[in-house]
Image (cartoon, rainbow, N blue to C red; front, side):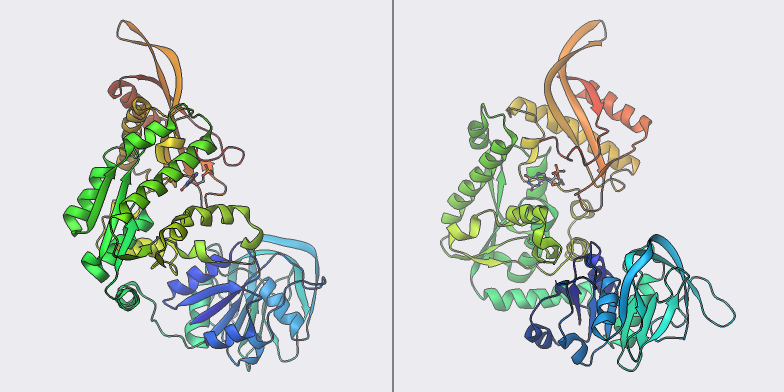
Length: 517
Ligand code: XMP
């Protein structure tokens, strides 16, 4: 297994993804983890990530010395290469001009890392590589024992190696897809240089996870809040496979779900898989508490508080339950150097804790803690969940509560559910669902004038929102074809009585957010 030390680069998670894609288990930890931890981890290789600092400035991060004393291969990427060079006796300086984006480097010296890896060759077997660069500093003098393994005019030391100690550094970013041979480079490092086997794969993982869950839980009972979202659905399927009827799911219908959602969840889990699911229709209760409330944050608070209340009431009926299962995934867990000061990270992990465990006195079971989102999806497929459920767009906890602007009313929710279902149906039919990251309809409680047949209408407006994004922190509005938008608009106005106007949201994030509230 591989240990990745994070120096705060925005690409660090991609390094972990590439390593796992090579069928090798890895973990990501902050660069300043204790030397004991690194020793006890027993890595077969260590990767030092990039990061925003400059090694020649004071008090910037360094790799713990143990990294270079363990006798295992080390790969430094960008800042990781620079700190390796500086720590082992080389020199790093500010580059006279920054190199950002596409670059070409020429391999040299037939290193164990780059040998025969190339996009284009030449007679001496020194291939050219298309790579992605993003740096203002560069290594200007090699530490003792190192040689140059690739270079270009702007960065004469674009890669370095001490083959005897198996230390490697690359200035470019092999973890981003723009570096075409990045995958090959990681496979070379983890398999050939570190000697890792191919032992991280989904079918084996399922068996291992089941074994772990069984030994952890024993004969105890487990409760899970099932929302119908990807993570809780995969947890439900996995726990059901592991402990069968010791699992009870609580599905809370808050009246703010999408069209037929409750039926679908019950059908998939209770009917098809035979999972024990308690279906609580609490929509009346939620609506009652939302009456007269227009402030978005207050709506969020009320919906969250009601959920906790309903969930507690239901779990009190299961006095034998000792565990609370949650769909926490690896990106929620990673405390990376970059995320320490990242507010968004804090907001997100807060969602997942939700105040439940403290008040319930249950032990926490988080079987997806070590998986990335796409691995969670892969696991869902391996467990037999329907493709459409596993590849669903995210849906916020407060649901339609933040997609009905201002006061939430049952009548508005009904109209919005139907409009939203038409939009999603047409996106799926046209192949655009997979090309967008999140899409939905928003209900605007304003009336505008229209004409239908010979009559005048005075009805509500629906806005369509579709975005493309990698991380939901920034997003582009999706350039959906006009014909598709026209068809959706037509269908909504014709099929949903009470709506006579449809508009399309063309705001990016920032400055707008993805949700309207
Ligand atoms: P914004 O609107 O902030 O949304 O651009 C970014 C992502 O977060 C989701 N979101 C939420 N998810 N509870 C959630 O569980 C919330 O209160 C919440 N607010 C926004 C949103 O759907 C998008 O994917």
